[in-house]
Amino acid sequence: MNKLAIISNFLGAIKNKYISYQEDRPFETKVKMATEVEGISGLELCYPQDFGDVEAVAKLLSENNLKVSAINFRSRRTGQWLRGSFSSQSATERKEVVEDLKKAMDHAARLGCDKITTCPLNDGHDYIFEMDYNKAYDFFEETIAEAASYRPDIKICIEYKLNDPRGRCLLGNAGETLAFCKRVGLPNVGATLDIGHSIQAGERPAQAAVMLARENRLFYVHLNDNDKQWDWDMIPGAFNFWDFVEFFYYLRKVGYNDWFAYDVFPKEIDTVENFKTVVACTKKLIEVSERLDDGKVKELLEKRNPAESMKYLYSLV
Image 1: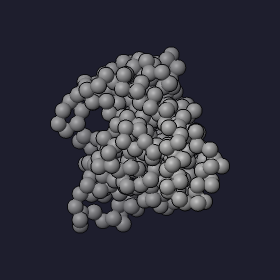
Image 2 (image 1 turned 30 degrees about the horizontal axis):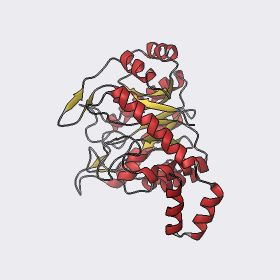
Image 3 (image 1 turned 90 degrees about the horizontal axis):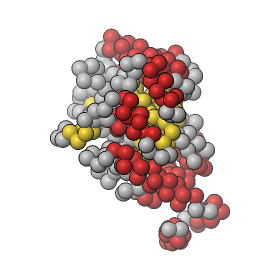
Image 4 (image 1 turned 135 degrees about the vertical axis):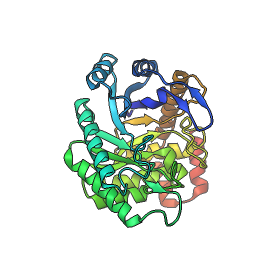
């Protein structure tokens, strides 16, 4: 089974624009909480929040037998880069972002991790005639290319999302992200497929995974769920059971054997209890996907008879 990790921020402060559900916790407490969830063997660390003392972080993780699945480079920050980071019109701001991203890449190498994941949420626009799209894409490509060229041993994984906080993000789906990666043209620039973002964007996550994998750009996966209306970061399988089953089936077919990291929002529920359920549901979904017989699936796909396909699927549960 793939290795499982939790994004460190989801073990701390939990709040939205209306309610604060849980207060922030020291990094040491977050690590302890992660060790209490059976099946979790890593953390996705958030930069710069988790990097006050890198050597202390490395020591703490080693003492608790936790690996680093990826470093989450936060490109949206209060008081900084308010009109985008990678695509900012300001050359000074873009330089700041690149230099900071390079630091995060060095930290990744120090911690034995080969991935930076970043969700460029604030690189986008709210209104028509607000952004020069050509320049925005040029700036975005240039900043990512410069950082990726700095350390070819570290992958940069672009986590696409349709919107939030911008009305429309520049990279809102798998196709846009793949086109962007091919424009950059470097082998260490690929995608983080957050299944919740994929669902919200109206994609079939399995199809998105296959498309990215065909071009060797499926670098990393986040797991959560939603109701197709908003990115609620819920427990996997809560809404889209069969999408998850198909997703896990095709991840095996394309040979994805890297980390699954959890991007799940516990709200007022006990955080450790919530993530124990998250892991249990993931294992069950994977187990159901493994009940699929390759020969039978091949036969059904050739027939393309949904009545027969659905009958077979429901015979497995």
